[in-house]
Image 1 (cartoon, rainbow, N blue to C red):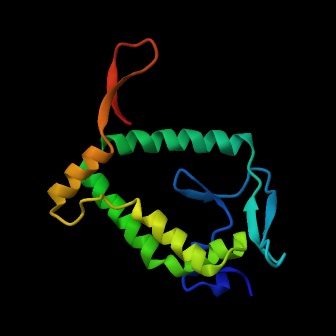
Image 2: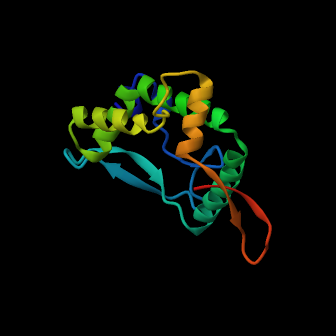
Length: 158
């Protein structure tokens, strides 16, 4: 049975790279096998990406950062809270994927998923959306940043 067949939600196991919101193969079509270090069994494959995919990913990440910078702290809080909820909702499948690809105990993988998800929620989330937005603004302040030799400034996440 494939790795995806062991999951409650097989769509979480994707053997492609995510660039600009789209799952893609390497331009060469080459893949690398991923094995479970505990058993030696092949878990799946990943695209063997090169310079062109790396450059595309960097370009898309820069676009995403520009979009993120335009969001208000309240909008960011909503997105991060949704990310948290998805990680917790899919914790068992994500932990199984981590265990299979890294050979670690399932309980350790579960703990890592829970711990990682905790960074997605503003620390003062016990209040109103306004309080969460203020918390986000304090955790991820915006400041002006000069670009190159230009005297023009734009908002930047520190």
